[in-house]
Image (spheres, rainbow, N blue to C red):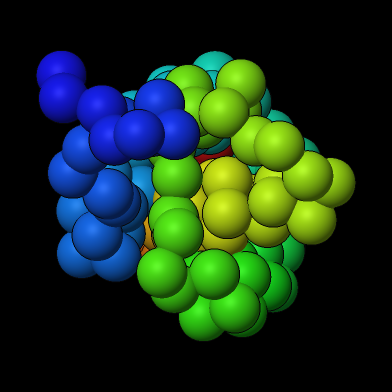
Length: 133
């Protein structure tokens, strides 16, 4: 991979690529969520698990806003996590934190939305269905 004079990997990160990867990680995280949900036997315990897990969406939204703010502050110098060794000042760490928060925020937002939707499916499931528990 090509690097610039500071040792930073080129090309720089783009918001669309970071967002796409965060959403893909979130969608991949839905599979263990469904498996964990199906392993819980009681209906009320299953609903409680999904209700608590859906709160991750709020944390995801918070991380997304914070990450977008860091990205906006460092718009000319966005770095990958592997470029951590190229940081020379304490304030330069914001160039790495922005993409990390955006990616993790989108991942948590997708997981929280999936848990919220699954909560409503479990809540509306008929008594004798496998989704009921």
